[in-house]
Amino acid sequence: MNENLKFLKEVFESRNLPEESLPEFVFWGRSNVGKSSLINSITKSKIAKTSKTPGRTRSLVFFEFEKRIRIVDFPGYGFSKIPKFNEFKIDRLIENYLSQRKVIKFIFLLIDARHGMMEIDKNIFCQLDKILGSKLIIIFTKIDKLKNHEDKKNLLQNNNLINDNFHKRFFNTSIKNSNDIFILRKFLFKSIEE
Image (cartoon, rainbow, N blue to C red):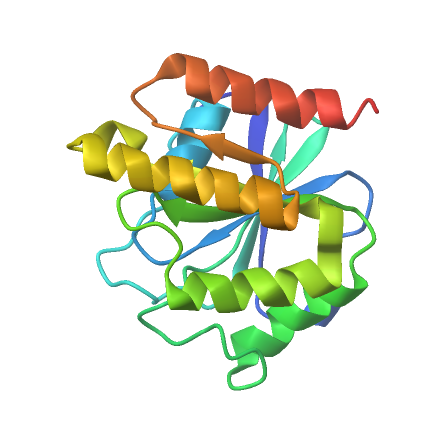
């Protein structure tokens, strides 16, 4: 276990959210987008658990990293129809967190580079953009799995769309590329100094 990282708590209800004492970086995306693997790569650990059953998680999981930031692991959406914000208990928890939490530094919306932004991602993106604006950042995952020129062309088009139309920052990542992870980790810590 990375001694600079600790599990803080798992939250099922808004009243149990931890004290707002450190900047929080939220990771969210479709089930199987590679969220847990990315968190584990950034923290050099295996602290974020993966599940064989997509959409099973019904909580927000908080980790404290180097006593300087918190990483918040949101449940994956897609298979469990979580993006309808007011339909399930977890939706209300997420909505309350996003609208009321004052220490959110950034929320990273993870998109599988092989599929690009799907309809469900666009719906979440629009919701988050209204609530958080410039705090929303896109991370394309699994870029090492792009197999041909057409896949890479689609990724470039997605990047341009986000940059030109939404003026959002984005990262292209692969957990197999240590430089990608280094850049993302550096961004996290540099952003809390600004």
